[in-house]
Image (cartoon, rainbow, N blue to C red; front, side, top):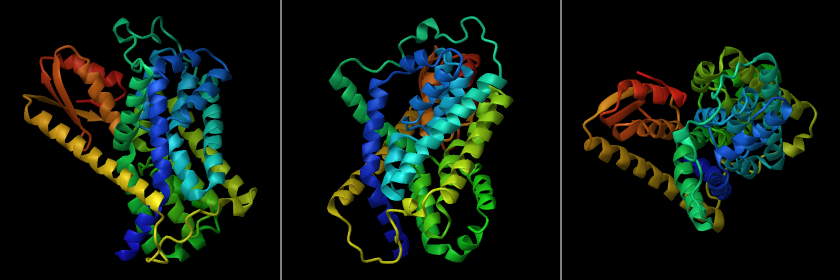
Length: 411
């Protein structure tokens, strides 16, 4: 037990300063860059909107399911299908928070190659969709409804935007990735302590087979871009090659069953196939290049022994950052529980079963969509049960239409 706790604290202490910095940058992006601005650059055909979409998506800290409502919004604002696919590929694989955390645990080479691979995969996938999945654009299908204009604009004024950046970065973002970050840390600590080194030493003799095995495990296992980092670190410390760990970093956050099912319904089967193929092939291609072409000295983890010495002292600044991050995680959990409990307690409700939600971004998107329906007085979406509890006198048809338009299925 002592080794597990020490492993957990060591990884958490190493990541926390960079994660807090990433959360703040994510808040700045949210407050100062509007979806309407992005959409204006993502319309039209050709490779330029595809590359722009990838460059827009790389720094955004959204998970694979959380990015779907954002992509739907971009499509409605005029983004092409190829550009939307590019955005869907690049965004969940990276993010300013995960890039910073990658640098903190795995070093600068991983931190540089990770967004580069996301850019390449997103560009290839987006261009393939533009070429092989032709779309018929109906009149007015890619424009906002009159009543929707301006709803995603950030608040006016520099200090109001800064306040919104802090709130989004250190409250909403913590709610979004906190659960998966903790899960990733616990899994990493358990792997570090309990999994024998010999298991991975034998697997590393067959790199391509090992990468396919990682893909097979990563697709059903939902893990965000930041939560995958400690797992990849623990696998490397157990003997897996950097290229195999890289496949987990890229395939795990972008290609899970929940997002694939929703994407198939909203973008079509052909676009979904291209999406998954781009993610998997790019991850394996870059993984093989890391193992076969690049110096192994570039990929030595910054944390090299998390369970060998349980009496190591921690530096003051990372410890303070860890305490702040832990407090934010606890506050976020308490805030979510209190909001759901108090609202449901005071509501005479009707319950809808929403399918496809896997993170707080999905939860917030469904709540926002239902709240905009005429007649809705209050709405609470429970992520763990997949239920939307609605009070008021809205039309059931309108509720279902709003949830469907947001990219989810509803009963």
